Length: 285
Image (cartoon, rainbow, N blue to C red; front, side, top):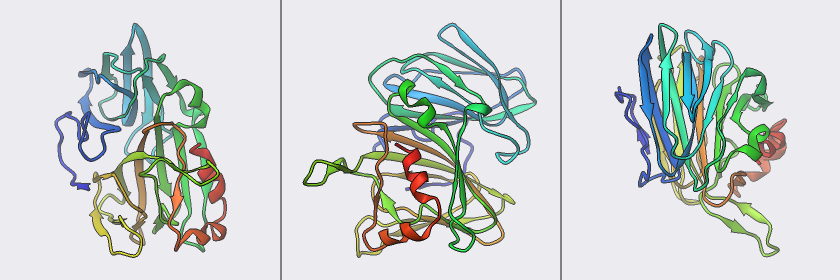
């Protein structure tokens, strides 16, 4: 489920009704100063997040100016975003010398109101430790703070803290809506799409995708700009020592927005060994 880095020419990398992750939408829009880009995605709510550069977003008669404050890369400042209602017509205009702007989406059937998320509205959580090789920082752009204003879309940026280490561990999945015998939700169906970046940018990582317990899965080498679509299975990833890793994360739920992860039974006990991981899990609800 690896999509190699490429120039997508401002066309969706994961389009509406993608056979692998039909609940997700993802585009990368590259513009230079004063260039504009229009889009409209029927059936999907979206969120615009400049990876680098500054843009103005026009939607539904509203203008959100000077969105994005990052220069060289995604480590250079805090993220900002604009929530776009289902099917709305949007215009993105580049104000800086150039921009690389992410457009994340999730399938939804109701039209809500647009709104902006500035740097002071980001929901931050940091967990793990250097000792457990799981130290990580998550910046939720559409997270708990926006829960009552969004349909099914969760959008975050995830950073390894330090160079090297694991992310998405203990191994977990979220490919089925199911409850336990008492009716408590133990897992939700959420399609997931990632876009990876590395510092230095010649860094690399490995994404594991194990679709069945006890059976070997697949491993994909990730490069700067790689996209992963996760349709099914347990999916931890690990970055090489000496490199920092970032990934832009899109989650779209089938029946609810809140994500309930199911930890792989053979590794679930590791939750107790990783500082702060329970708070991280709670932030996706």
